[in-house]
Image (cartoon, rainbow, N blue to C red; front, side, top):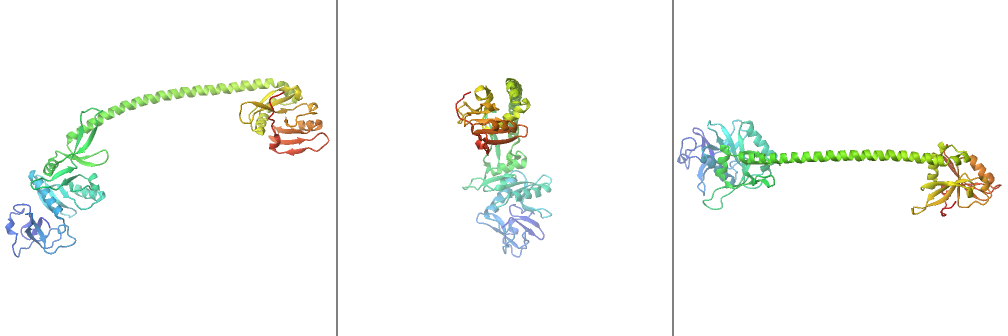
Length: 434
């Protein structure tokens, strides 16, 4: 059922108006035999009647399946009428079921301005609709310069993207339709930065809400979360004032943070400079220590025929062969003037144990400890050791020039030697001794 019909001579009829919008009375169409009335939507034949709630309307002789006016629900029918009555009560011309000339939209209620131009559509939207469809239909109205307010009875997803109101049916006779969602105010008291502020929905009559909307006392506001509401300019100014306070406080905080970051950056730069200086000093200290160590071992180099330049790579090969931290002692007369090598004790206890001897005098090899490794820098030294051996010896040939490592078990002079793998180096775990 609908509120409008078309007469071939009188034109458009609106059952919600006393004169039907064309200067005729309801008695001219109600129960008049032979009267030709058509539905403006599907052009099917319609008749005038009054519902059990005394609501005048038009009904189809044969209800078509694809006509929206013929198949609308009673709730939709009543809400359309209420929207039209609210607009008229506010002093505006409001017609029901108005279509555009291009028929690309049909408003449930069209409100006209003082010049008779379509001004705002009031849509009673009770059937499902996606947010995309709501935005598309809103944009379609906007192309013709028409604003729109969507009205629903329940929570709908599209309420958050288009201007809308949510209303309640009157529960008892004499009550008015009530808006309880979509009309909002900004609550902020006292107006200090510490006081909480929020947008909150208010309850009002549908007549007041429509009046405020049509008279411009409220307009569309989009919240920071993207939700669309109706609110008064005063509330928007209050929200702007709050935002300015927050922005100023944020600016102060950012400035303080920037100053703190600047100071921290300066402190980090100063600490980095100190670390760099300390690192440079450690490098210089290591150079001094190496120079002192080379100076300390100058006599040993002369004795062993070693070049001080190859001592560092030789030491690296010793560490690699040991797999532990090492340190050099002094030349030991008890070990044929060889240079003592100590390695860190197993288990990381912190102590060092005698592990080997570098280039001992071959004359001292007669009663050499079986578990003490001899370290030499080349095969020339190995040959000297082999020629003088009087007991089984373990020899590691660590050539700092070729970077080649050979591990040989030397037999007493006159018997065959045998090579061993790296595990055969066998660092000693005996206590420190010289």
